[in-house]
View (cartoon, helix red, strand yellow):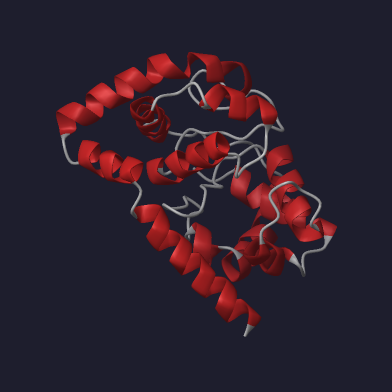
Length: 205
């Protein structure tokens, strides 16, 4: 029953998320190839201040910082909104995002979404076990290839340390972004399981 209510809450959140004006604007741009190209180009210029942490093309050079490249644009736009509103807590991110206009937020999301993410090196001995665990616990939300969607982030190609830290924090409830659905999914993972899942995800294209 607990899982049922969690899933219902997730669905209701999805409906609210899909109806925001920014998301409507995003869809309108995506439907127009010329507008989409212009948005990507504008987004590239706007993200100059993101490069220090997330890399010039959204591919992080810092192991503990996530890649933004390749994420679903609707998911990215929602995270930008959450930082701007204070729903997601990070003083540095909140300060940066508050200066972005609504159209610039859409452009940033489109730009990062347009970039392909190269897979990272992994421990080959861990990949098979990680794939098995991911298929059982994670694929329903994050997708069979871990590419995410409008509601859930892309995990494929993320940095190994970032993945391990994030999964562990969700499991232990020690992170800023505690999430009931993620807590349930990761609750049974041992430390070696976390390592295996992270190794599987980091090497995915």
